[in-house]
Image (cartoon, rainbow, N blue to C red; front, side, top):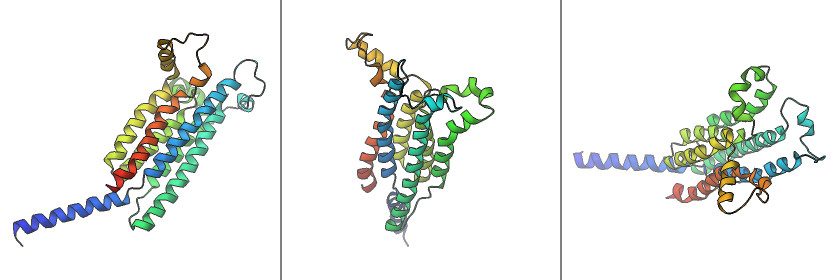
Length: 234
């Protein structure tokens, strides 16, 4: 075999490896599901704000106000349910994709990460150590948006096993948007934008803006999922 033939054979092998790697990518559905789910939680934060205002007697948070999980802990439970559904859907989708393509990516790491991280708010609030660690960990849980960060951990684990540059870019963009939404009141920034548009304190849509922290992370995943099909099949 000549050197030219050997180089051609190596190129063919590398092309087959790239093709096989692309064929096993199946992250489009998880991105679409979690993007839509994150966006769907926005009205719930608006609802929580409305029901927690003085004079509201129909708040579903009443049960949680007397429980260790916090006043608006039902939001974290909804995130936990959404992560559980998304995890099950991801496992089913990857197995189905593996049956069709003959190459299946292991989802054990992402599943374990999503499960453990999704339970973090529940474990933290119910743990005897919560009182000791409150001064260190409270920024992650006080806004009931920790689900965004739990989702980021699972996406990082998924990007590692997928070895997809595209998924890494989407995941890093999402994480960059999710972390501030978890540890900071992002609606404050939107208040400033509305002030620049001429809104005063009297007509500021405070209630609607309570759902704003989940919008950008959700949109990033949704757009990433929509763009993944072309990228995967290119």
